[in-house]
Length: 75
Image (cartoon, rainbow, N blue to C red; front, top):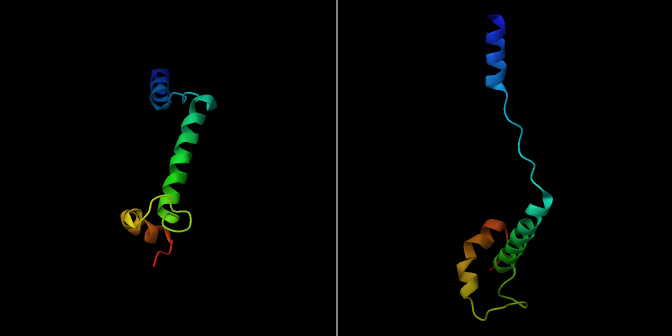
């Protein structure tokens, strides 16, 4: 009787092992997300200046609050 209670308690608290995630499956997505993050950082931090891709202040106005949130000076 005591063995049944102990076995039930052990089987109820044991969790399945996490599945292995191969690096080859994750690496392309990690590179893609990293490139998107760098592009977003460029537009928030460096667009409108000597390296400007778009003329005018449209991009600056769209990311203005993000600049201040990340600590980039803009005016």
